[in-house]
Image (cartoon, rainbow, N blue to C red; front, side, top):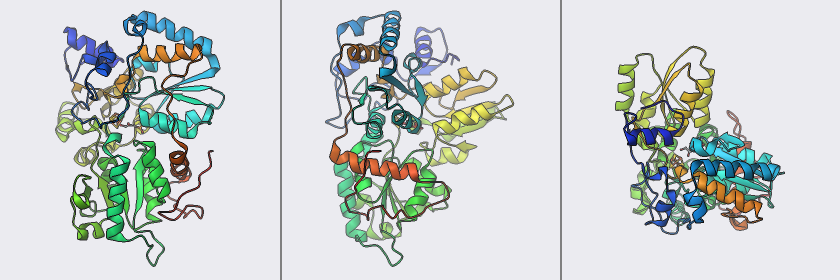
Length: 447
Ligand code: 13P
Ligand code: SF4
């Protein structure tokens, strides 16, 4: 594999034979609109085999001028539009976004940092979110009502987030209430507290807000589970089974107390006894990018580089996290590399755009992705400079395109669940007197 920062260039070099290596797809390099206009799939990339739910947002065809413009022309148009818009617009770019888009971002970060950035830029009329759908929804929840959050390509979803929908979660909750009842025990603990990963639709964040629950990210999952266990006997964790399992295991919870909930089976495929004994009920969701990492890759990295430091994201399967030296969020990985004083060899288990960018930014270290196949997050990859040029030039003409808005009925409890997360502190799990009892409607004010 080459060491170019840009995954696009790496894929281009691999496909032309200019570089050795393999890639899972070359299709998105030039024309994502062909994928958008085609049959309903996530498109090429790590999640292409995942079934796309019916009703997922579709991106209509964008004007031909943006589809046929050269890279150089798009670059000039994006820069000119941004310069003219000035402070009226803020462009956010997720760590996993391709470099060809990240170069225009005013802020680059993880989903949590970008949500905070959205909250901090109240002066901007529009927030252009170069990430995926659930991130844009979160930005809408945390920004001012008059600010428009724009997702340049509506088809930029997240296959993991789509693995839990509100109907399935409501149905699961009903069944769990039949098993556990709704009343708190003698210690005042609720039978179960719902926790949703940030990577979920806003209506799921609203669900946990309404039922005394909370949102977590990969950087605060432990703190959030402590918060939940201060209020309940058990946790329902969705949609990512791996983040839930890895975090609960690190807290000393046994695997036998973490049954998996398959939404297509009665009681999620469990018997009542198992559910009674459970501490964490794990939803059957996963990330197709992080599922690609294996212990065999770690073994190989250690064989080839005996001093290698292996850091993986907690969305990786448990055996991979156990075999790594460290596991942490995207920001943890970035900070660990920045903090290394001596030249170090790092093998990283997370999305390739971030790994290659870190490698280019830290030439004193040897940094490579554990997965030898160059296989980006296909949904993040749906945002091409052509879409960014389209939404920015439309703003100049006074037109807001692809605005992401969370309805008020969902927004209030979803904001409450996010605010509980923002207020949760490591090591402290005070029971918040204002937190509504599970099952009661929450009243949350827009911050
Ligand atoms: P972060 O929360 O670290 O930004 O990660 C988001 C994500 O999608 C990980 O796969
Ligand atoms: Fe979703 Fe995985 Fe892509 Fe993150 S890397 S946006 S969890 S599909």
